[in-house]
Length: 177
Length: 96
Image (cartoon, rainbow over all chains, first blue to last red; front, side, top):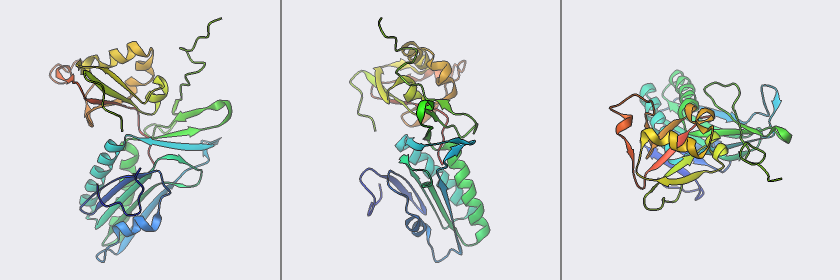
């Protein structure tokens, strides 16, 4: 683990030659992630901020919660960062995902890339995000509130997630009469 | 993230829908266990788990993805889950 100046003990991060990846339960810090990739050789920094939406297909979402397989998610994020950095000749790439409850409208993921020229930075930023969404071992649960309960979202189909099976009142919870 | 399993056991981590289905995040199962018998062992503990969750999930063994496809006699049938190993059920991911 690298130096963790302003990061909390619960945070997880890895660093490697122009690549930085992290998972945190804290608010995401946009100036800090830009500073991670800032370089005198760069002519562009592209920053993507993913924010939590208040609905899914028109259905109101009350709250979102993210969980992760921390060591594997970090490993996958670092693999993606290395791949994208090499492919697009980036000066730097940093990716941070927030975990736990993320209130509506706040950032859940930040990706920053720096490159000598803007074209490579735009392309690399998009590719890094798409690879993250397809591969990183992080899961989003959307809470609808009321009797609706929640669902675990799946990026790969983008449609309905798997309904959360609640232990009480489920198949296995028979009450003796 | 999970504490070490007791001697003679391995840990199974249940993420997302797998955790909701089992109402657990982690559980220790007796080792050794052939990898090809894992889904059967889990299904016998949680009826319907296979069709609801496992068939749509990937599996890691000590942070490396393993092939759960049956019929691959050279690969999956040879892998044995050992004492102290960490297995994880990985449902479709949804970062971002």
